[in-house]
Image (cartoon, rainbow, N blue to C red; front, side):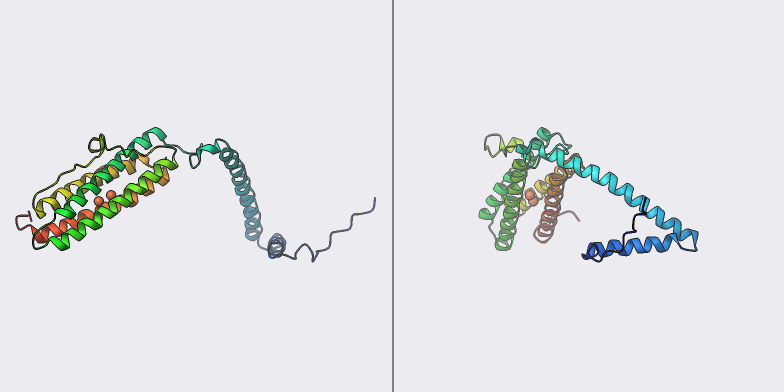
Length: 235
Ligand SMILES: [Fe+2]
Ligand SMILES: [Fe+2]
């Protein structure tokens, strides 16, 4: 039987950049294999073995991911990789939504009721916070729909679902104090929600982490305002 002619390096097969890179790597491998140094020969073989192993496990994961993504496509963003208790996450996010709505209402009340010599600057701070809380409420409601839930905007029971309270406060200082208390409650409960979500619902967790960071800023702003306005504040 005639010996099969050895395939000559074909310019056509090395026409694209990726093919040229492949050619280059084959050349490197041949050079390593014929190397005088055994370490270099070994490193080439190990690299190829690792590449094969990584490619094999990754490819099987990709096909599994694709198969799972096609199942229950009506569930939108909720895939079988969603590890959290969805009903519980929706309930917890609805509590956070109620907390944000109550915060909007309280800050709005304080914005319109702020009086006194410092009223203007403080009212602007209240308004800014009210707008931030409204943004948080929208983010949370949006996320609830992404995981196939329904955001609860029912005014009945809103104050009960909310973690923080609706306290009107009389003077400007009282208002700031009440807002600071509410922010501190939100900080504690959101931190707990973040820990609860863990890596089971990463998107919800990251959203709550972002909101938590803003609530901490709010608390800091209020603490500074209180320090300026309240001479009876504890040191
Ligand atoms: Fe908020
Ligand atoms: Fe806040």
